[in-house]
Image 1: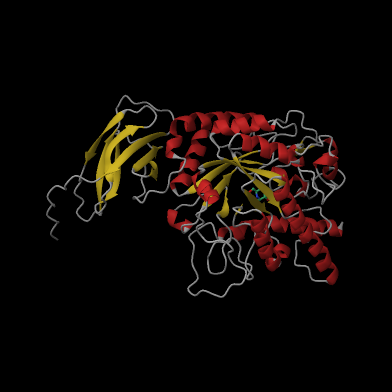
Image 2: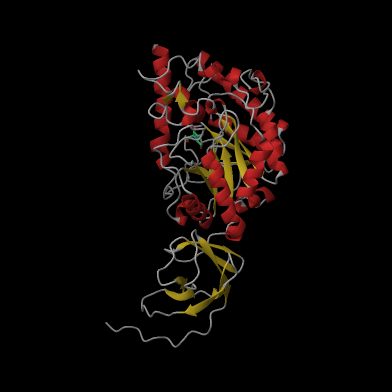
Length: 500
Ligand code: FHN
């Protein structure tokens, strides 16, 4: 009981550890005043310009899929909801305390013997993602419970031991790649039930031997995934917050180098490792560790400057938390299509990708709520994706009407807050040589009047271009105003400044 309790406290400690530490990087980046010598810092440049990274920057919308043994219970155990017991549906195995089910090692750790998803159809999933407009997909090869969805030769606890037997990772990678959707493999370093895993720093010789075995096992599985599935574009690492992994910074540095050498162009996010001062996501000089910032999870940056020019993606659940299948959504606020479109355009307007999570059930079916959202997002993307894919942040004063994105000489305003007077006022710095000269509604190509309105705010650094929406134009969802940018007409005489 003592060991069990200690383990559970450690596990809960870990989940608490995610909280306060995550605040340090998902906010304004305070750069240290003086730089220090760092031996285990970044391996790749802050801004890669190779084809794979250019594709990453242009994705806009992605899909996350959390699937594994936790999909069988679906956040319930013997009819009792795990909501009050576990941090998230895929954490049901950590549910502890007097009301918790007992003996997870006997129960949960034998779920694999019944894992036989009869409805699983990777091609159908990929088709749905394609229709939704996803350009990449992140798939859980192995979550914290350690069960591998591919027939790994480094652990018996894998799909080949289940009644399903077949290589799910291969089916998913092949199906999504065939649909032209890039695949990234989610891999949890943390493994709750691996006898060689330690959350704390290994101290004794025995602990060091044990954890070194675990590190070798981790390396073997990662190299195996690259060998088995060479089509993949990157890894999405998770479960890297424990002291044991943070102290292994020389091993993780060399492992990242080896993975990149084996798979040129591989994309790895900032959650994989830390520097020798245990600084995660960013080294102790504030330089990003990895190819993109991977800390935005169920949260979005409130200012473009917070991103410090780094590439990034934000991953989002539909229920408040819970990445794995949740049978019961009642009583939870589940995000609407409009919520998700806002988050998508928020992300893309700041040069990020937005990744929506799906948690299929134990038979391989998506939740009906997920099917509905995928369809509605896809319907919107079919009309408006020009404002999403391959666009960049627009250096304009922030608008209250929605989000700007830009591509070459085109400015897109995705309107979420339609002005009551039907005038979409675009603030442009007075010194700008690139102003809206024509406009249309992207969805129906209706030409819109553009009027230069110098509203005479003497100290104003901006001038204004009013795009007039037809009163009869109706929209039940966000819509896009597409503007061509060009040279400003010769300015009217300069108004006399106020005398005060
Ligand atoms: O603990 C995991 C969690 O289960 C889920 O996989 C998310 C997805 O990004 N990552 C960790 C929590 O931050």
